[in-house]
Length: 266
Image (cartoon, rainbow, N blue to C red):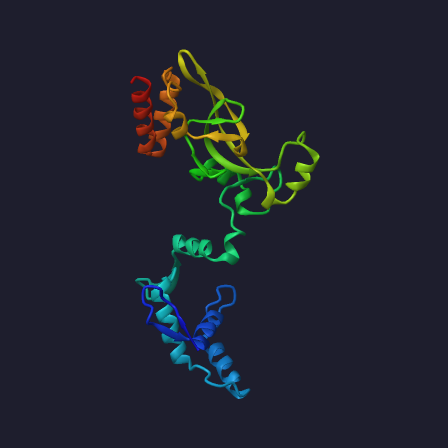
């Protein structure tokens, strides 16, 4: 039996026995030495298994599969002749996202664990010091950090970062029970409330926390609504967005300011 291992090369096949043996020998949690691999193959032959692949053919199969899916680990030799290995973090994360066994166990956002800490994503550094994941999807709509949005109360808001947290103590008892586990904790946004006045949109000085489930309208929706931005932007909001764009080197924020000014002054 053979497997097609490349959609772009449908005429390329490898034997199933090579494929599954390669999966076994490539386990990142259980690395095998060359001696152990050879011993396992010899053990299989001794039990009477048919068509057991050789160690040489397994090396060729592994090299071929690496060329298809890439290998996040690269061998590096120092000037002194020492050999060590460097992992490509981006490729390793991409592989984990592509793996259905690990994808749903991964955390996309940091978590406010209160006084307790059991995982790296519980740490204050990931929660407050490092850059936040730039977006969140709520009911099919994507909301970005540092962009004006509107929540279900009709108020406006500019999120700075997103994070998981336990619901407030005064929330409904059933909800509290539902969110006991970390995987079920709701997603919140830390940012600034924005008030729409005749003088323009005004950003409040103190940051607030609201659940992302309250988001109902993105900046694109607001900008597309006739007359909603006609009041213009106050200097405070412009200064806030411009400073954020300078700090994050994000030209999209500057573009947002220009677009908003153009719409409000049209």
